Image 1 (cartoon, rainbow, N blue to C red):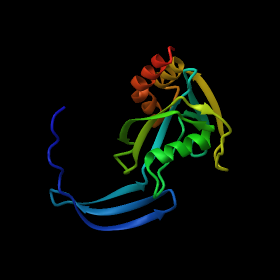
Image 2: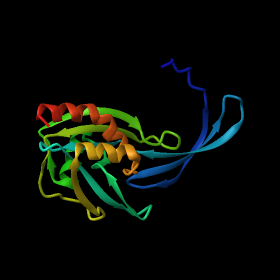
Image 3: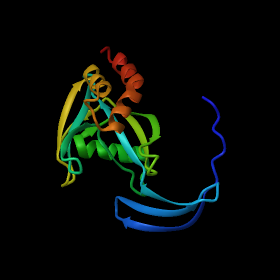
Image 4: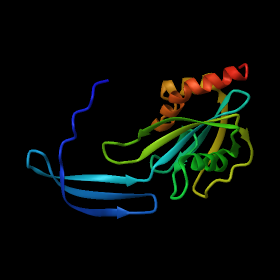
Length: 190
């Protein structure tokens, strides 16, 4: 991969918030571009978030089918959520695992970090593999409508590759975690 050139120098002339909420903010910036032109850029400010790829000792990857109001449809996903102040990404990953699928992991491995919407916002994703997950009773938020599905690892990988998992960060999280998941499955003799 080649080295990136230095970033262009934009000058922020002014900013204003069009919307602010507990979950995200919408900020509009007036900028001066490197060529001297003025332009407006709208940015979504969002806290970092975590995605958890849970694998059971039986070699099953635990997916959730979650109803998503903005699109009016059910989506296959892995457990995920925002990183709250004063919590580490791994602490939040463990909390999301408990809340959404009732899971407790024997072992955690960091998989990757990436931006989820770098053209319009600053949300940064941290992905963890949760290994040796034992399932219990979920403790979901009132707005979470979730059905838990444990599927064989190969089926989960096929779902991610085929586009059946339409939540992009979930599909990417599964595919990035594949080497860790396969290594763990091999340790278990699966």
